[in-house]
Structure formats: C-alpha cells, structure tokens
Amino acid sequence: MNYRKLSTLLCLSLLVSACAWVKPTERGANVKVAEPGDVSNCRKVGTSTVSVLDNVAGLPRSYRTLTEELATLARNEAANLNGDTVVPAGEIVNGQQVFDVYDCHPDADGAMTIPYPQ
Image (cartoon, rainbow, N blue to C red; front, top):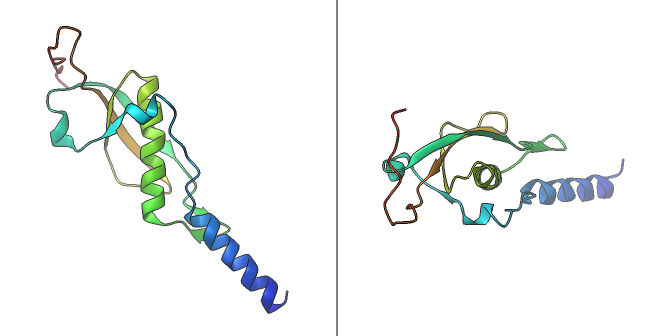
C-alpha cells in the first residue's frame, strides 16, 4: 500500500472515530443526566447497561464521544422505563457503562414522588 492510500485511510479512520453515531429519541431528549446528589428526592425505577464501540478500525475513540453516546443511549432507555433522569453508576469499561434510572417528575398534584428504600 502506498503512502498516499495509507494517509487517506488513517485520516478517514480518525474522522470516523470522532463521530457521534447515537442520536436521542424524541422521548430520550427529555431525560436529563444528573449526579447522585441530584436524585435524593427521586424514585429509582431501574438500571440500564448501555454499550458502544470503544474503538474503530483498531483506533480508540475519544473519551468525550464515548461519554456522550453512552449518556444518550441511557437517556433513550430511561424513557422506555418511564424515567426522566439517569445517573452514571460506574465508569466506562470496554465501551460499556451502567446507569441508574430515576423518576424525578412531580406527581399530577405537584408533589414530588417519594423515594423508596434501596
């Protein structure tokens, strides 16, 4: 393979590895990502383990891209679980991360949902 083809292939691989492939669903766009201290008055509705490719063509993807895509997948899944907030429950390992899903919306009468013991 000549130098020009190799350079082109390398540039394309770097561009692709930086791209975000995951898009929020309509419902997932309404779910927020929070910190553990932000959900003390919320009800935990489940846990979601999400994963993306952590490398493309043998090249590692950026941590920022991985973080954004995993959060987007978790938000999409939270909407399916009737949650409105996700909190990372661990670090990214091999392109996979666990998120806790919470319902933090006030009830119809304006009262906040009471959390249950975990």
